[in-house]
Structures are given as structure tokens and as C-alpha cells.
Image 1 (cartoon, helix red, strand yellow):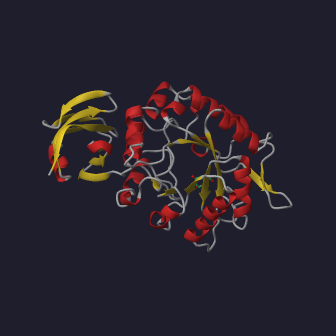
Image 2 (cartoon, helix red, strand yellow):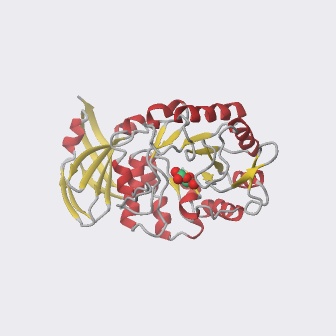
Amino acid sequence: MGWNSWNKFECKINETIIREIADALVRTGMKDAGYEYITVDDCWQIGRDSLGNILADPERFPSGMKSLVDYVHSKGLKFGIYSDAGTQTCQGRPGSRGYEFQDARTYAKWGVDLLKYDWCNHGKQNAEASYTIMRDAVYKAGRPMVLSICEWGTNKPWEWGASIGHTWRTTEDIINCFDCKNNWGGLGVLQIIDLQVEIGGYSGPGHWNDPDMLEIGNGVLTANEERSHISMWSMFSAPLIAGNDIRNMSAQTNEILTNKEVLAIDQDSLGISATRWMKYGDLEIWFKPLNDHNFVFCFLNRSNQPVTINQDLKTIIKNYKVDGSYNVRDVWKHKDNGTTEVNIKGTIAGHDVLMLKLTRKYYSRR
Ligand code: GLA
């Protein structure tokens, strides 16, 4: 869990913003809720010196990266940086191709804790080999770092990423909308969700599918859509990387980002990525087993119209070879909602979710 500069600031970043974001993470309770990594995405770098060392933009980062990293660390947070496996980043800044070991040494010297490693301008490079070089470079540099593979799913990184990095992007970039697509390759929340259906099984502790950063608080999604966004990412046990200006976020955005009951589902120690159990037209029911024989169901209403439900959950549980009765809790309303002995009834607003945690009353394994 953390924050990344790209979704909100793109190239318009500087050290003041990053310091203020670090302060805001602490002030707003985001840090206490678990958001820990602050990652400076593309555009921090400007060139290389005569020895090939990567240089931060001195106008935007006049105090240098080391002092920024120290500041972030002084808040009890971790620092992430961005580079690219090709010759240039997506914004035309220097990539790490040919400089992998030197760059990893530099990041280690600065105290970096996470590297997001992108895939622009890779020419004919092989993806698995390119990410392996950076993995080895980080090992060699001797500082533990999360290696966040940002290859957009093009070469099925879920098939080879587990021994190379800790997370891998599964799709093209998220765009700030719930249900849309654009032709340069951006995907809305629903379009990203659809691409997780087949690959959930590849994700697990230490090697996670990454459906990209959050667009919560960026002014376009409705509260319903924002709830669906973070709920589904939590169903996937996905990295939760906030992408908004948390210095000025509304109380509502803060509440959505820090709902502890939802975050606990994301962070559940089994780390299972949910299965889409049912699809009734625009209504989907997603299912995720949790630690301690508990479960969570997330009803996702894809349409912008309300939908009425009358759903037996007992049968679904039986399909997973577990009998017994479960207490049902609505983790958005923070309210208990009966047991699995009776059907779940109600209305789900357009583009909203009903996220129910089932806690075992008693159970027997068949
Ligand atoms: C790619 C990545 C994004 C972001 C930009 C920066 O598009 O997928 O997440 O890092 O590059 O240029």
C-alpha cells in the first residue's frame, strides 16, 4: 500500500509536493491505515553525468534525491522511485537499459525501498530477460527493494514474474473513469476488472497481480464508483496505491481510502485473488476466501441503474465444501446483516457494490 505521483501529477512533480504528500499521509491517517510507500513516478530524472550516473532534475528536486528519501524515511514511510527497462522512459527521460547495475547502486545509495520499472522504448528487448537484469542489479546493490514490474501485461508477466519481481502490472494504464476505454490503451475500472478474471490464480503472497493505481479522489468517479474500485482491488488482494492529491482530499475520499474493514480484506494473509462466481447480466458476485475460514462476497453492479437482489449465500459456500452458518457483515455500512441462514435481500445502487464479510459462527468441513 502506498501513494504514487503519476495519476494526479504526471510530470508536474517536485520535491515540495512529495514532502507535503509525506506529511499528509501521516496527518490524514493514511499511514496508520497502512499506506506506506511514496513513489516518485516518471519525470524526476533529467539526464546522466559524464560517468553515466543518473541525475535528478535540479530545478524540481534542488535538494537532491537522497535528502528527499531521508525526509520520507523520517516520517516512518518508505520511498519508491521509477525507471524503465528500455532506453527511455515513457516521457522520454533516460531509461536504465545498459545502466541497470549503476542505477540500482545509485538507488541503493539514496535509500530507495521500491523500484517501479516500466516498459517504454524497449525495442526488441525480451521482457523476462530485461526484468531479470534489473532484479539481479538490485540484488547486487545490496538494498532490499520491492520490484514493481510495469510491463502492462503484454508478455503475460504473471507467467514469469514471480521469481523476478514482487508485483506485475496486468493491464494497460488505468484512466480516470469507471466504464470506458480509449484508443491509446487506457482502461476504465470495469475494463481492468474484466482482465483479472482469468489470472487470479497467479497472484499470491510475495508475487502479486497489479491492476494499476487508484483513481479515487481524482474528481471523476462518483462515491459509488470509488467504493467499487477499492472494493474490487481488495477482492484481488491487489497493491493499493493511492493516486490523488491527499494534501487536499475530501473527508469522503479519505473515508473511502481508509475503510479499515475493506483494507483488512485486501491485506488478508492468505492473499487470494477473488473468483467471479456469478454473472447475472450486469450484476456480478465475486468470492474470496479469507484467513480463518472466513469469506467475502462482493456484489458488483456494473450498470448505472439500481439492482435488487435476493441471494442465497449458503449454497455458494457449500460449493466450496464448507458447511455451517456465518454471520454476515456489510463492510461499507459497518453493520451486521444477519446470517447465511437467510437470503441476502436489498438494492444496490448503480455502479456500487455490496461487500459482505462472512464470519464463521460454527462450521464443519465435509
Ligand atoms: C506508463 C506507466 C504508467 C506511468 C507512465 C509514466 O504509462 O504504465 O503507470 O508510470 O508510464 O510515464
